[in-house]
Length: 62
Image (cartoon, rainbow, N blue to C red):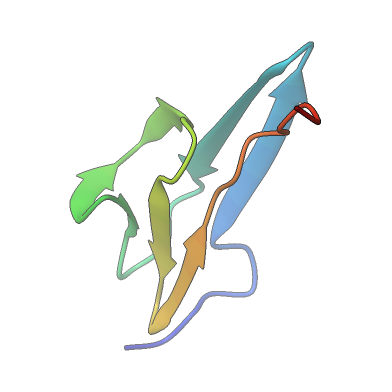
């Protein structure tokens, strides 16, 4: 599975983060579901090609 030069875009608006597929051939997946755009939650797994990334929201010190 390949990764496109412009495969996906991560955006931050205030405290919220989203990931959007930007027309890649193989798609972008969050928690194994193919997405167009999705809001990310703590521990979501983003897959771009053969690469898997885990999103961690900021955690306050306890």
